Image (tube, rainbow, N blue to C red; front, side, top):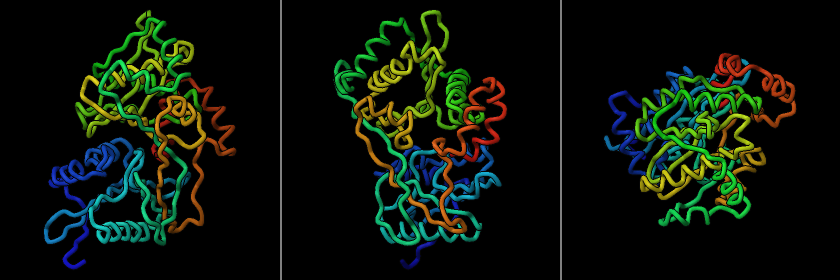
Length: 346
């Protein structure tokens, strides 16, 4: 395309970038410029946000971050710690030029690979190949709040009704710290390094009302489950959720997500996006029990220096002993050590 320029985003162009995301049908919460500041300030990863201009008009964008670790490798990703990413453009030629720019940048940086987290399938062209190992789960929220329970599968409805007998209480006033503590303990129990607590604070500070916490308390007013959710374009996305060991018996996580549906309904939200999970993982199986629509995520990768992609999945047998060891760590120690590892596991 003639007169097409691809260059890096400048700080004074954040509003222009976000306006493009807001008005593009495929624009997601994870394309917003706020993630640039969040990921850079919390994890220290260098950003490479690219925009395409046609005769001074913005016609495409591509958020990118560089992750570099001697343990986990060197990658250029759109976008780490996020479900969705990749190019936004209404023009196929612009999309291809931005994707080529991403690959060329990966070559200049000598990364192992470049990854684009496309929300929908995109026609494959070399050097890109499909990397489809995750799925997201979606459900519309009915206009009648009394009908929300009927959208859930029968067995899961029984679990929700059981949770409603446990005298649980909920609080959706802003409490990123308490929400993080619940999430951190849950992640430790799974044997996974947790993010820095700065992440939850940075998300709330950056996105304001678009970011909300929900805490579930037992009958003694003790917090047992919590989730941080994002609100964008008539959608609610419960993103960082977890609970204490007691949450299993109380079914407080089930109570929490069902209550979130009602809170979102009261806000006028019409769509519930349950986020991504690795296929056949525990969270994947849990979400399937709700009966939502499963949508495979067709991520794409282009190998640069690597001969194959690293397998960073917790299902990888070589991490078995590490996971067992991590599960035995005191929660506070896991919160101290976790951020040094988790910053490369996005």
